[in-house]
Length: 133
Image (cartoon, rainbow, N blue to C red; front, side, top):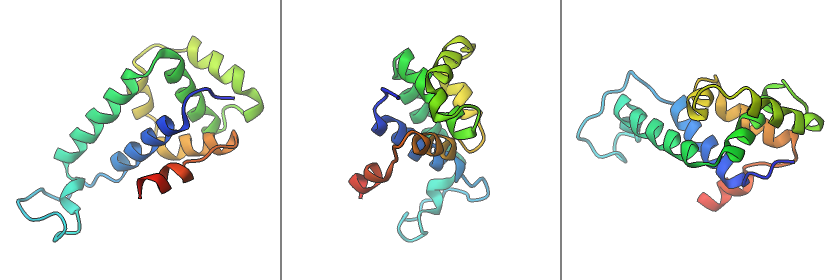
């Protein structure tokens, strides 16, 4: 079973969802965010800020946490089952060739992969989301 704090994984999920929802077609302006339905939050400028935040967060994790984050994504993608958790972690450690943040942000649908991985291991972000409201 993973030893990484679920809240850390859920933070990455939330930030990955923000990146995935980025809309390049909306230009930022000086309007009030509540008046424009927060559409200016989803601009290229906001995208860079969110990307920097998630990269900094993942890079600040220790190697074991980064390895487990990759393994969770792989379990969520179906490369490994929950029963193969230890093998997934071992493979993630052995295959590390680039910064973990760069690898993870290159995965399509990262948020869904991490959530699915947590689900396979009997965890979820439900309590994390409830704490944020």
